[in-house]
Image 1 (cartoon, rainbow, N blue to C red):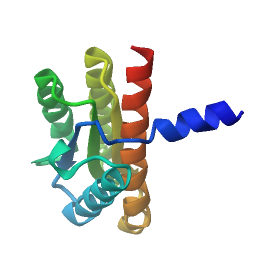
Image 2: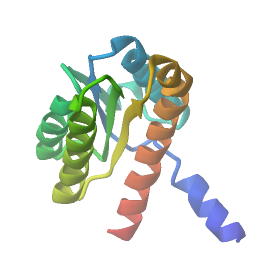
Image 3: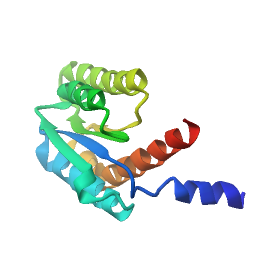
Image 4: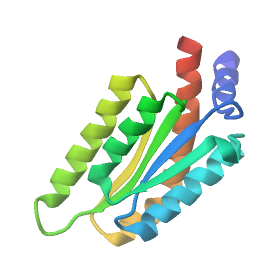
Amino acid sequence: MFGAEKGKADRLDGKKLRIGIVQARFNESITDTLAASATAELHALGVPADHITLVKVPGALEVPVALQAMAETDRFDALIALGCIIRGETYHFELVANESGAGVSRVSLDYQLPIANAIITTENLAQAVARQTEKGTDAARVAVEMANLLEDLG
């Protein structure tokens, strides 16, 4: 068990990694906090500031195409998808949530590149606010751990 724990700690070392972040601007007060907490955690994990690239897109549906463009550069060890979809009164919520999530997964699988999906989906603004910091932090940790895991497996 000790060896497994040591391996996990090693996988959270971001010193050599390059991370790309795609942030949706829709519900920007939430996504700004997601981005700030993800970036702060990346720094805490040792990722140098000049190894983090942040781009903004209009909304969650545009996140996958920006992730794809970043993946095609072959400059990143992992990517992070940030967005916030809050349920409204129409079917649009399901469409945006399902399609953005499927797009993120497809890019990750197509490029064999880890993508931490922190496009949060909530019933209301209060739920989004309650999750914004934790989910940004979690996404950073997932990106670093998975980048290191894939490097170990490769």
